[in-house]
Length: 152
Image (cartoon, rainbow, N blue to C red; front, side, top):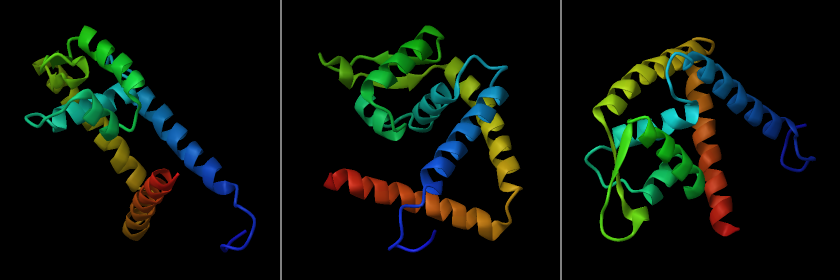
């Protein structure tokens, strides 16, 4: 079914969810030789890429598209593993700065290469135009969902 006046095409949620879970499953398998999960990698990546900037838990939760409670659990685990640290700023614990340790930065670089290789492998399955269109559609989808969320 195509067009705006037809019934809702059920392929969209199934395809989007299937793509996400497939990517997550393969990435988890590729990370098996590291101590982190895909969610922990995403958190660590954002911490490492934002070093030197103001990064507290509220900002980080928006970057990793997670709620603060889930992020708290991930950060506690990364802290126990010695990969990140929280530096206190004032009395509000939610305002702690989040920083990567040298071990966290090193592990991030290793995991980033795994992620980049997987991305290259996926992109090789598409021609350049298809890859560009796919990324464009995904970015537009995120924007449309943000618009819906801000209205709702």
